[in-house]
Length: 422
Image (cartoon, rainbow, N blue to C red; front, top):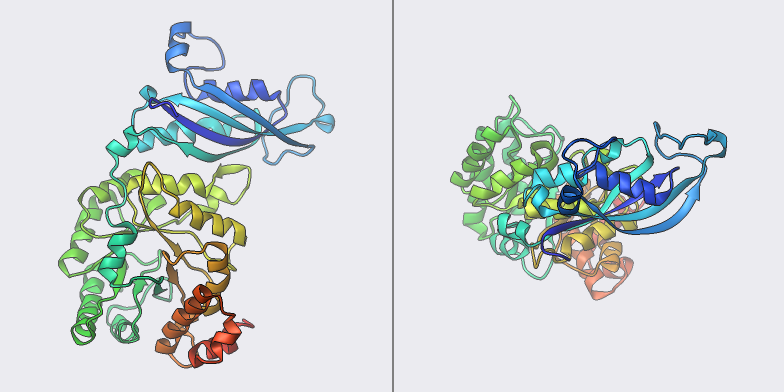
């Protein structure tokens, strides 16, 4: 790729000729408008215009995927044909520079509103090294997370505090203590719990870290807790420092809620791993002909500096199928701009047996595997729930069926008994 250009790939659907539609995209996001204007010289277009690199025609449909699409003049709606294609554009870096917010305005700006399209989705993005020079990316990534958590050669096993809005301050003590004594590696706040009046962040951090440190002093294992510090930009540093000064080892931020610039701002001074949550992801991705792919999203989050990123889990309660989730895990582990390693975070309806299809789809243990009910609702208690999750991964890595492994591991057997039919 040319060092001074950004390449973006889209899937589009349009009733217009594909060459024309692609030029509309390129013009809208660079030098063009709906009519020629003074100053729009050939020299300007040559230097600053977006270029159509390639058009790969796909199939056709007779019903538009999105409302509000326009038709070419003289085309009867009952006879309209909507063409689908992969369109690749390149943009001069000089138009916006190595800036995440201005990159987004260019490659994912007004394009979605163009009437010529009945579908448009950003599916991949290639960036010049100037972005790597501007954004250092993950500070801890996989290696740093493993070092802080003391977990090597297997996934980090974790859970989420429920109910989603969190607990009253003192109610955290017995649960965190029990989870820590059970040997869990990782706990996170839910995205809905940040700084509620019934459990202010400052008080919550104090109580939770007291319990974590107390157990660590006795066992030698200090679990990693991702405190949700999401808030307005001017709150991020104060919230981060609360966790740091209390001895915490991770902060969580909802990347879409604070924005990529907010996440990158946090990365500038963070001394802790940043656990990236993808709130609002469904709004950005659920329609296959709108928004953007996770392939793009995870690249942007890595640039902004997250160390972990939620990918969903296989056999989840949400709308994504297993191949979509597996691809999200693969994308997160694929080197980008020469590195930027992050840990995928698997969650949603997960339990011990989830390890088997996960490892078969993506044979890696460089993940954080979160189970709520799969740990907390284990019939023999939390410690058995944690053990069952580890045993599920042992079976997966060794290529042993979950049923066969359960014959020698009662915690796993009880998990199968409890969760296999729920």
